[in-house]
Image (cartoon, rainbow, N blue to C red):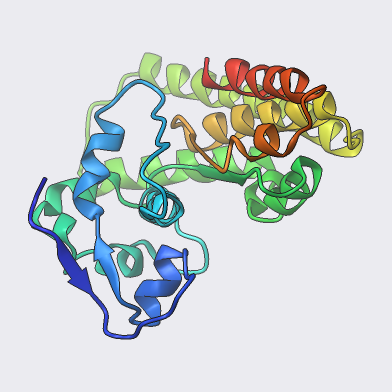
Length: 246
C-alpha cells in the first residue's frame, strides 16, 4: 500500500461525499491510488470491511473520477486530481477520467425512490438520438479533415453511413425500451429491476462504453428484513444484479 496522503484542513464528522469534501477542503485520506485497480479488474468487486473505513467515500470518488462530467468541463474534473496520489499517473487521468457512464445506487433508501432520483441525473435519456449520432459523425468528419485525411474510397463512406444508421436504430430501440419502463414503473421490485437494466443498456450504447455500476449499502435491505422475508430480499438483489452484471 502506498504511503498515505492526507488532504484538506477542515474537520467535519460524517461527510461521505468525495467531491464535496475536496471542494470544501475537508480533511480526508487520499485513496486515489486505488483507482487503476478498479478498471484493471474485469470482475465485480465487493468491499465489506473494515467498518468506518470510508467505503462510501471510495464509491463517491469512483463516481466522481470515472463519470462523464456533469455541470463542469472535463478539464475542470481532471484538475481536481492533479495534486492527488493519482496525479503521479497523468496518462491514466487522461485516458480514464470522465470517460464512463456511472450509476451509483444507495440501497439504504427505497429502490423505487432511488431510481426515480437516478433518472434525473442523466439528461441524455431525453435527447434526440438521431441528432446525437449526426453530431458524432460530424465530429469524426471534422477530425479527419483536421488531420488532412485524403483518398477516402466510396466504400468507406458507405460503411460509415451504414454504421451510423445501425447506431441510430440500436439507440432508438434502447431508448424506446427505457421510456416504456419509465412510463410503466411501479413500486414492485421486478418493475424497478427492468428499469435499471434498460437504463444500463441505454447508457452503454449511448456512451459506447460499459457502464460502471456502484452499489452502496447493498446488504442493508437484508439486515433490516425480518427472518421470514430475508431469503426473498436476497433473491431480489440477486435477480437485480445477475442480468446487469452479465
